[in-house]
Length: 424
Image 1 (spheres, rainbow, N blue to C red):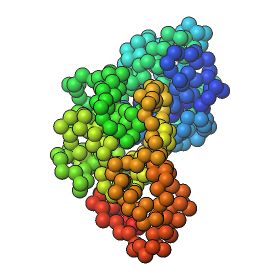
Image 2 (tube, rainbow, N blue to C red):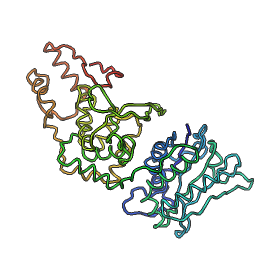
Image 3 (cartoon, one colour):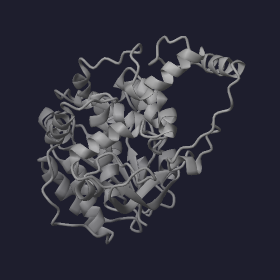
Image 4 (cartoon, rainbow, N blue to C red):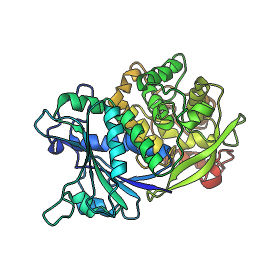
């Protein structure tokens, strides 16, 4: 497997603005911020879809690791791409790539191809492949000196102190990432398809999902549902979305009686290590069916109702995204951050207006159990939708025990119960 290390240049925040001019509608107008968001949310997913194994030199937007530390992380990788944008006098435009001056690492033909397709994707000019040496002839730029990948390059995507160049870049990040991934796939001999169906525009996909949400009784906030659909299906362009109408990556399980679709997928251990498996996913007749099943999924078995209690009880999109990750919906260690980033960047929280999660309203699926608990004196009957503290949980168990209750047992058919002993 070909391994690529992405290095989002610089750190996050105003200290790393470096002359980046404001672009209306884009929240990451600092070079460090933009480098990270582009790498994490656009380039990394595009490369992974093309079949590459991809890691990044940092996992959060803020830090600015040393050049030596960044370069060391690429040891054992085939390619290190240091992601940057440029600055000059406010008038310069274009994309340029710095190749390594080390003949053993140099890859001019690849750099030339990347320069050409990135310039076209962004809509700026191609400044070509460049080399800069120190007095002793070695690489001038530290990331190229310290980069331990087989090949190490710096991509300066545009001049961010030129408003028009910056605007073109940030409004074409997805096209830039897709073009980059295609060139790299061809260079490394990975199969790509030139006959893929037309790809929907990002805004169109949001509207498609939003329209399907109309008239649907949701337990998750609309903003979270839309963000999950975007992230899990790559704006409806994933293999799973196109061939199974599955927008949320929901796998097959014992309680699913519909069709399935098997494909390779990436998982991530808590240590951060990634590995690939073949898994069977649910296949739906339509996108609407996928959305409905996704919302029903969280309370469709006893195990899920218990496991996703915090998701169902969350009162805002940030808490709901955090709960999704912590309850194990996805193995991606940055899952919640990616969802929140999508919601805030696209303003999806506007769709939550008027959606009120009332903690005093009992959910339909819990009514019988709630009435039983009130009758037995296990609960006082207040705040059925509120989160429960450890003391409240122990108190309710204590009341149950005092009234002669027996230990509950888990009799769920959820796939998760095969791997996790819930102790219930």
